[in-house]
Length: 99
Image (cartoon, rainbow, N blue to C red; front, top):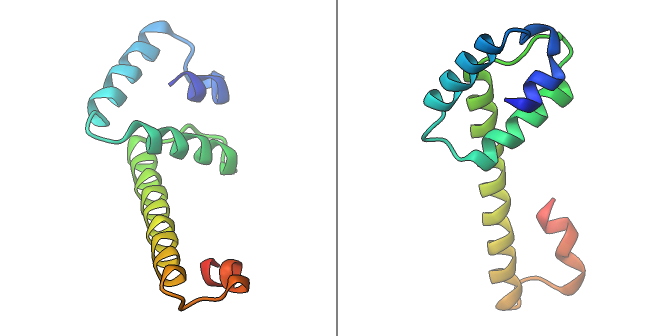
């Protein structure tokens, strides 16, 4: 929440508002992977053009998309290594195959 408060200071002025918001976000995201939530918050702030702080659902959805993209890249990299290991790819194919 500190990063959101810093990015949108006009929305979190009262300390009780901040505490209530932190408690709610923690409760709503307790089962989510902190790594992907953090990446989602940063991505939201970086690409925000409206100037409003994010909603919990927006961050969770963005975290889900980021996680999916990471898993897809990991699977692609694993498949690449397997194909390379059995000689299905040549040494110059590295970058083209992963794109």
